[in-house]
Length: 429
Image (cartoon, rainbow, N blue to C red; front, side, top):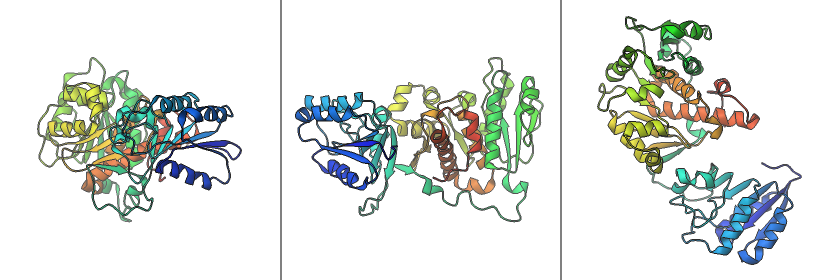
């Protein structure tokens, strides 16, 4: 975040959080470091402002840690406000000072960090939607010398090391049939790009075959953009391939005059197909609550707005309890897998652990990003070997999707969504 000639301002409070910040100062031997120990925020404010006037390249916040449980007084609020108003990059140690660690709510005022480097394990409050404006990007340092905890909670933080060796090596004697045949049912007038993005993303997962079915008015424009993908114009009399191993339905099926038969076909696949079905975008609004075919793999990929419609509630309600919303979605729609998109996308079902994705950034908020994720998930779940552990396949897809965005953002911030396709499945950071 800084260059060798830039100054780093470290603000250290009285407690152990301040001790951590002071310890970090000793390690920054190749940077100019200004360390201010804050004992009295009122008398120290003028010094802080003087150093801020020298334009630090980074401010390290070590004022308060997880033990803070009382509202900050006027002196502390003034100091924190001055730091926030400086607009210089901010890194918070463990928890942004002033934020309640178990709820994510500010105690009067709180540091608005660009990055929070939390220690040991993510604090539950840092994951809340309301905390995002204070936490920024959440990074974890898991090994800080603590005794390993033998217990696990409902939420599991998913990181790059969880996917070492995944997907598994392909057998030397494999052929196209070994890796399945994905059908993508997508695209309509005005929305054909979604089908192309989904199909291309599926290619990055490398299933054996991909067939894209789209409505006749956009067949020519769609087929001209794809090569290895087999493109078909769908009609109510179309016959599906007899070797299908998974289906993605929904991307770009949003034209207002879409034939009712398209919706009926999508719903029939969701209810009856023996193979995995991934419902995304418009298809989510067509699903009926209740059980589907026993033991069949079903996945839905809603963003918060879609989740709210599925649950007949508000976006605020979904965002106030994202794990609870995921559980309710899974229960309502046949025990399906749910990929609840957003900051720290959640992956899980009505029972068991919920994986919390650690990759990704706000630059993923572009049209087409979700189509890419749905297609990539489909490409993975079309492969019979990867169907053995649906949760791992989903978590890997979500993590790679976010890691590709992180890589692109490191290079340049004006990247476009099509560029995600180049990096799916590449990142191992």
